[in-house]
Length: 327
Image (cartoon, rainbow, N blue to C red):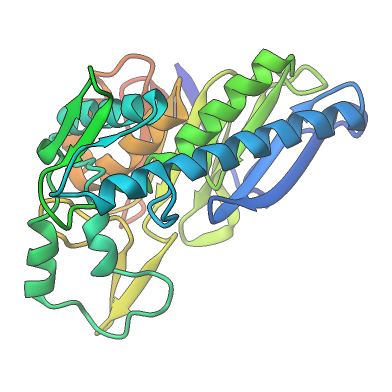
């Protein structure tokens, strides 16, 4: 049973830092804010571990980036509707797992949603609502069932020209997992990788306590909605407040429904706990699309995975094994 105590805090990672043994660095990776904390004997050892984590995250970005023309993922996109592309086992396996996630979420999670990036932009460049025709044309290219995998040849083929893979709803979680695994193998006894809200933890803090993290308050991002202690698991929070545009007084979030091409409505924040940040990342996005009732039902069927949903009215909904105490 996971217990969440509702409080107000001022930071998103609330940890009792010991200057002697806990070391932390924040930097920009994969276009997002990453925070890496490790428990070490001294600053030199910490620098070694953090540098290894950074290099691993940069390595992953070069594989899964849909913007880098030299990445494996972009080569798949460039050959959509033309020919299969041979890829590394790592990328092949990631795509294979992504297809499984699409299946268990009834297509709410779909890595072929990349074509929507030309329709909806959340960098301040949008000046008007996209047309129904433009949305419909982009949706026609979104379908995870049109990914063809050849395991024997380790190739990936997108059957329709214009299809585009994107790992925006999975990549940071995957990077957090890989960085964590690497540091554990290198001997780091404890730490936390926070990939802009996609967190994975292991071990304890220097003082022996668990890592304390917080859910962002959707209506005041300077404060926490609630805090909880974790160790050895991942937690991902996604919110419709992260990126959005507004037209005619109505706000639209960056979380797009693959079936309709329009932003999801009705949910403000989703937090998912799971052994892997990759899984939690994908499910947090999918729940926005599936909705509260179906999303919670699906989470309740996945072992070692729980969720907390905050709807647009501020009401909290949880999966079966979440216990909430307000104070």
